[in-house]
Image (cartoon, rainbow, N blue to C red; front, side):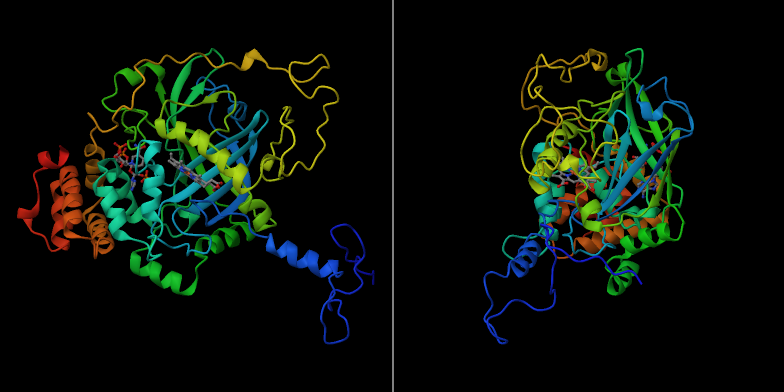
Length: 491
Ligand code: NDP
Ligand code: HEM
């Protein structure tokens, strides 16, 4: 039998005894010179990094994206370059509001963050399992998230805060309707769709710009729990989604999603009856049909949860040639927020970690800072411009200019915006049983909320569809006379 390797300290010194600390006499006290004990305790003290301020609880896996359809007329992005082309990915799923120890089977939006390790850099599509979001101006994001977290005094989640904010923010109605519908409580991460949600840009070789939305359609089908079923799941297993994903991949039952896009010619933004950059709206399929692009398969579990899942760092600012941003104000806010969070949460050089590291060469001039664990090979070219052959810019990667217009101002995102038609359409496409469950779930979540707030919110449901408003009102013990006219709610 071969002898196991000798254990060492982090500095490489052999450890003679890993069972007993160094003490003066058998009963102690301990000696300060026991640097091996100190190293162990000190390392343990530093085992946690700050949890993500949102989406703290998650699960991740590696996989492959394979192109099945040619979309090169819309984008020159190399990962879409040829049918059959494969790109390695890492996907992290998450719940949004709960802390790192929260139960998986809670009613909440799910994160769907994909890192494509392309040959021209990492492309991060940091989406959710919903095609829309609660707000449309990033200035409201910290306020909205506060309502999902704990009350400062009670340290309890507060339905009053949630419904107060939502009822004062009619743009949230579409997402609220999805959240309380069947899709708001998926049976696991394999059984939900993913959406890039925002409008992004595609840029082709000819320099033309298209607007694009990304959809991942679950090939496992959509499966959801009722609230009662989820209570039973949580009572037995707080890690139900992690377990489901991990075990499926371990036994070779690899989950798959069909990636589809909706594409809009650049000039259409002048004519659509809705703002195509508004994150609270979808693009109707009838106007912008789904075009299949490829299949994403998850086929490898991470070997180390902390190293790979906890330290994985996604940012909507990570784009590649052929994919660009849109004017969507929310996207613009997110372009700042994520890398800033990573520099704080993980460390300055977080992109050098194996899970985050691009699979192509990187050549930049950033220097120093925490976690610089490789010596940059720059010679005398450690600033730019230089005369020593350092990397230089390449104008071939310039994007075509984007025409924008208007005065700089704090423009109201509410003026002239229809917050009711699309939620109404969604309500009507559900069958009567699904509508009933939606309204039951809402009424359950509104228990204990002050009447004034309930009435204000019911007016929004009513404006989307009278049956929606009436159904919730009745469940909350209100009657028809409590319902304002749709007109009044819309004002
Ligand atoms: P369509 O009838 O063409 O599309 C309806 C979509 O609704 C389908 O993609 C379906 O997903 C999805 N859906 C069904 N039940 C739910 C639910 N409980 N929660 C969320 N989505 C659900 O109509 P439109 O394109 O005109 O859209 C109508 C409404 O459908 C929208 O207002 C929006 O709320 C919702 N929707 C639209 C999407 C879009 O990109 N157009 C995307 C997702 C939702 P599936 O194919 O998996 O059954
Ligand atoms: C995580 C900010 C809106 C999806 C995060 C994090 C921040 C953040 C700071 C934590 C990042 C980290 O520590 O690693 C914001 C802001 C938003 C916004 C400021 C609006 C202005 C959205 C929207 C979506 C989304 C609209 C989906 C369409 C996610 C996902 C994660 C996340 C999936 C987790 C990523 C992961 O798995 O690591 N967000 N967010 N966010 N956000 Fe947002």
